[in-house]
Length: 88
Image 1 (cartoon, rainbow, N blue to C red):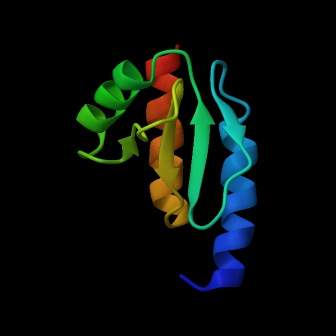
Image 2 (image 1 turned 180 degrees about the vertical axis):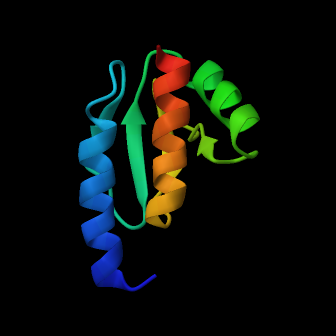
């Protein structure tokens, strides 16, 4: 993925993530987005079961957060759907 495309997709993805109740994207660098959430381990477990292990990870040393890699638009849309379902 080209750096320019990644930045555009990251901005779009982050904006869409912010529309999901209980998920608050934080300023992040690189191809990752840090999300402030209520129950990070539970959320990661549920989403990873629906999609694939490691889609959401719980970073060490940061409480109340998960992180997600910015992928291709199709992958990001699948993650958005899964997050909406689990947060409903």
